Image (cartoon, rainbow over all chains, first blue to last red; front, side, top):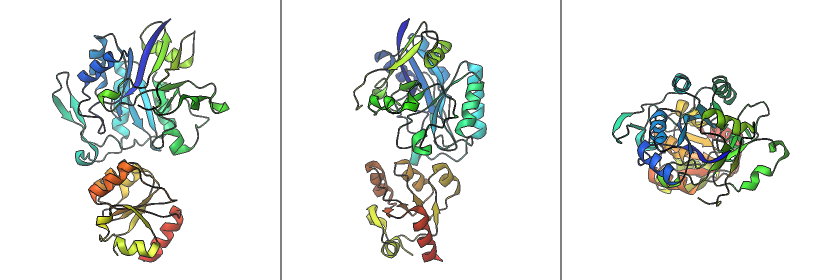
Length: 251
Length: 110
């Protein structure tokens, strides 16, 4: 069993709130500097930087979970990662189909830039990526899981855009692989309620800026770096598991 | 009616955007879902909500909202107030619920 340090929630320059410095190239350099072995690429409602980052990161021995942070109809943020390029394309098409389309306004929200590995801008996303998609949290869960993906409601205890802020509870019928707790939370939160006892919790940086990458992480204990092993660790199967690293409360 | 007059009539607090209270508003929209406001709010409306984070201001700016009224004594975050002052979109407050403030506002403007 090996220990792999993971930060499963990272934004790039594509997310409107992502810093202009968060290019795929710079992101991978910083991830390596921080000793990360697994990173999750989760731009708001877009997967379009994930494969480039996966390719760049592989050269550095870093495994990438490719996906997006989808905003459901209830305005809950959800980390959705797909196992291979084909299913990733399906996820992108799903988002394209259901995204509530409104013209982007860089003045109000920031730039939504697609760049290449030389940090040259190749395109701009025309629709506002922080809008919701017209699917409920259960529908999105079903879609991701039916297609072999990993589904993790993001920062569930954050004051906005979270399971608890929008619904007040973790719905008992919701299927998920883990719950992400907010990066600024004390870790004893996860032990507070009985009904949370068997749930896998992760913590990630939700980094929108280079210096925040790897500031909150989860250690994965598994045999090798691949999607199926990550899934097993989240499910606590066959000896694989994951554990939130002890971090200082303030990032 | 101007925002200033409304504040007096409905006994609202002012959290930020004091320099823009003489604007006139046209109607109001009540919603806590940002995607709903993006889709349905009209310019110069007041926006009644309990959301206090910075994106509220970004959306208010996008939709040319006249002013925001926070219900149930909610108060804006510091960065939201800063944006409010920069965008000149006042953030007002009431201790009343959305239902109550909407009812009063509706009566006042009919």
